[in-house]
Image 1: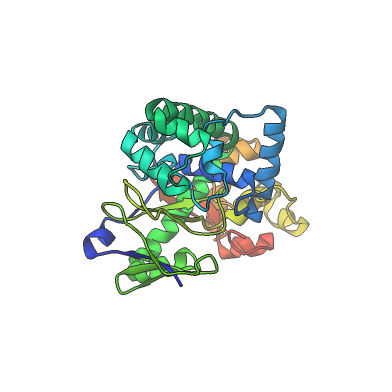
Image 2 (image 1 turned 90 degrees about the horizontal axis):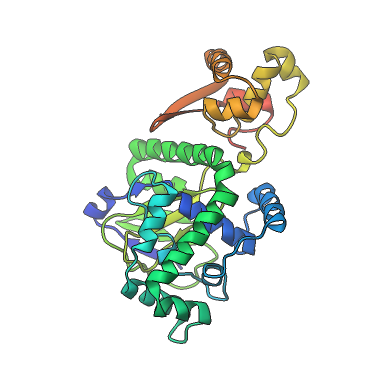
Length: 331
């Protein structure tokens, strides 16, 4: 059984990738609730739980919509990003622009005609409710996501770069075959299978192509908006998440230190998760110029590679570099 999205040539041509800080924020809150918890994020979950125990968040308007006994949640909480890398402020502005009709229709799809109290209050006063939700999500992002955003963004950018190369090498079939084990492309259809789908369903696709959104702080599953007034989003686990919270946290092997020197060995260990020179300088407590010099030597030795993602240049270990760290790339 599968969830199916039909895509014509025009829709496939309009399909794009996007990085979404709002999606990360919503996904992180759902992880904190225990929904589809992804064990690779346990370090972040423990940090976030300690942060909230120290100073709780007021999520009185948002939490009941995200965390309930229903299998889905209102689609307007994460509108399809308009660009490849919208800011959290841009995305929250789009959330606030959701029309009253769209808010009420989305609430009915999730909760039915008898709305719970928070949803009923939102349906009665959509504009005021959306402003309150946006304010809560803004604070949640600032507290829980922003402190880690540079490294999260590097992982997301590296994922998009990898997917773009897959698309260039083999078209949509190769792209979707590599996106997630539960996804496959066949005869103009993108099909999501796996243990979660026990019936055949067809997505009521939104206008235009799909928006493919890699997610770090999310579940291990693919999430597809089944009915939406904006473009249909496909949120999937970003590649290389497993190394994000562990890279740079363990001491470099003595043999690697003797071979490369301590700073270069630490750089190699930290680059099990993609990073910019600024990220590396901050993590290791050295100047960006010193990091650049060491990276030049590691690149010449074939231990790290780099690629440009928008305005940033990302560095990451090669297979040879990962072998010196004792792990596969991104592992």
